[in-house]
Length: 292
Image 1 (cartoon, one colour):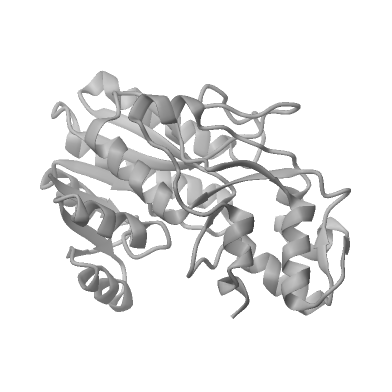
Image 2: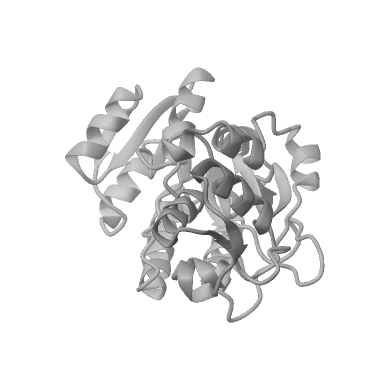
């Protein structure tokens, strides 16, 4: 297949593109900057210049493809509602281009929190939560099944880890260095789901290749790692004490750290015969690359 990938030079995309190429697919990657274009080309993909606001370019990329994987998202937590609106318009443009074709459209989302239990693929983000807006976008994508598209949603956990990750775990390391203590919120029993980036990339490929129309999938390896265990590994590697800290010490991450949000991928593993094989989060942290 020829696969059009948005966010092709990002953290997830930089693993998805080689995963697709290794499986024999041809890839066209969206690139909004010269640096992104160089990275996409170096990975072996063709480059399509544009960004999420350039809807005509998105339609053109999708029209020329046999499958679309939509990974790009504007991670601006100071204007999150605007980011969600941009994402909604981009997904709609991609869906319009694929309408009536039966071709797959795979989009990224986040796993929800299910108070008091482990979230599954059948759960939805609570109204008013941080993920509620993206949940609406995901529902709109799945509704494209009625318009002749084969849509699926891959929900990613709080941490997609691996060498080169600059996400939440890297930010916790930076905060620990700045504060002189590796902290957690409350008693640190709150659990974060996680997955290695290579496992996530493989699931996106499988979704494009074979996920049934309307599938909600979870890219989860570790169902839930207590945040105090994460803090303990960080503290040991940085030779810093580990202790509870106010949520405010972590900026926007404080609210996320305060919520227990384990998630499972049992349904996904059975549906697509996808089984995580990469290192777990704590093992990956112990390997040391987050502390270079």
